[in-house]
Length: 103
Length: 470
Image (cartoon, rainbow over all chains, first blue to last red; front, side):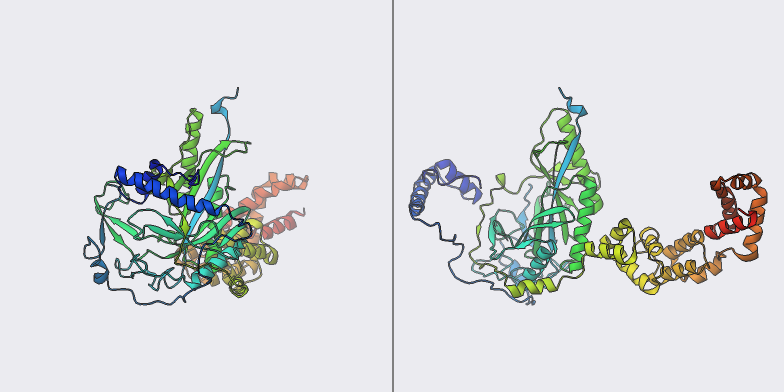
């Protein structure tokens, strides 16, 4: 937030690295360079849409024209714990083990 | 030039309240809500964030959200959408929380003079249990995640910075809790985390309009701690400014035991959450029918209840609010009033001051005591003693009066005591005859001492006047 992406549709390597860090991606210098160029092109394309007069068009958040798809507040059986823990890279008998976020 | 140390500062406080909704199931899947169950026994691929799953919002959670918004006088968005709030933290397996961003369900309300900025729907995170559990995140080496709580429906209520003291913040939060309790949308249990209050605090030189740098206070799990935490933070900020320093924007953890404030590491650098519309959830566009249903489900709320107590039972505004804003006591008052409607003021006074929630007294017993006072069987002074017994042990007021000899002094007994008091206070009698009416207090006091408070003050005054012909 607060970062303008549309500055002449140029994304520099610093911005690429910032976004990569937020997404927990490790990029080599070459990859960052390549991403900067590719993302700049994507933004060029988006900027092209700015040439259209869209004053009367509501922003699109969803592509399907559906609203209020809701479910009733009725319980369904949860999945067996063993079954769910089996999916985890690391678990003890009761829970998912993770590296402590503070350590 | 103004000296910084002599300056008066004004605190500016806004609150953020997370309310767990009392639905049967989670926000986006059919797993049952639970508290205190074995870890990870209420999970499924949706709330564990497995790839390819499709979340579907809980209709009742939307309804509760609408009820909260309407009760707080908010505007309901004609078309509200969910966003993904992206962050990496083990309490959230999807690496994003489904929340609302620029189009919350409810916005722009007000409760008791504090404006409500917004109220939006979101999902709760999982619970991290740290090895070598110390209650803090730092220091532990490995953690275990319990996802039972993950996906619990939450409403986050954000106020405008309209509060100007810690005490006011606590009082307002109490009113909000009672309002939510009355709505029946949440257990509002702060110990169990179904109501969580964070405070945003800044201070500024009194009279200035610009806001100072704010800090966010977390983990205040009772109203008392909320008040203490805010007071501690206000004092800390004042100390910094008086020494010419600058308050740093940060999130602080309040330690309930030591009263200390410490900085929390932030979940994400610079809170860059990269919100974007949740593609798996279609917009919520509350229909007229949905809004009317929510409106119809709203019962009498504490503010309206206070007004009713004041209007219908002639209570002072203070007692009316005390009773209405502490729902349990309000219920106690109304239950007792149904038994004894004759003297609501005395009854209210006793409920507010003498029989705290959880005491052994029943509404019926307190009502009966008020009737005994009305009938002149027990004096107001002796009633206080009966109340102490009722609060501590419960029981029947008539029996307590009989057992402890607390019946009102009257008739010949009282007459004799009054005569004696008059005889022993000749000076006072003289003064009353000279027109210094307040001197009667000395004689009344003597009678009260002699009867150990069992006499009715008005009755005693009447007897004294009759006897000395004043």
